[in-house]
Amino acid sequence: MLVVNRFRAPAGDPRDLRADLRVVHDLLAGSTGYVEGHVGRNLDDPDLWVLTTRWESTGAYRRALSTYDFKLHGLPLMISALDEPSAYELVEPDSVLNVAEPRVT
Image 1 (cartoon, rainbow, N blue to C red):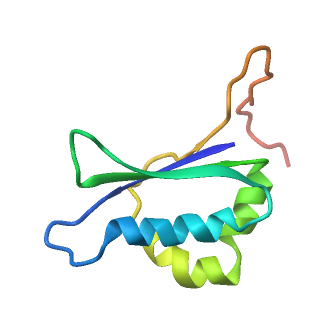
Image 2 (cartoon, rainbow, N blue to C red; image 1 turned 180 degrees about the vertical axis):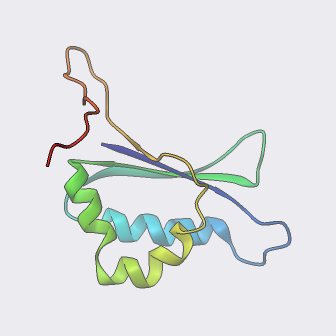
């Protein structure tokens, strides 16, 4: 599973977004099921930042988000991510893709 979260640095904001993203990445990187991740900045728009992480499973990612340390130190930044879909499945040769189906109850 691939997660892509994008952030826009607010104009005149004294926070260091780079350092904040590094903290969030380090929190996630210490979680079970974390595979790899990166912090990046857009080449054409330097106020646009990205945090990408790869996970063994959706469950591993969700468990990482539910830890006490993440809720305390990571969530305040994550809620400022751009409001857009962030979870992607990795598409590899001959892989079976997820099928979106309504749940039957």
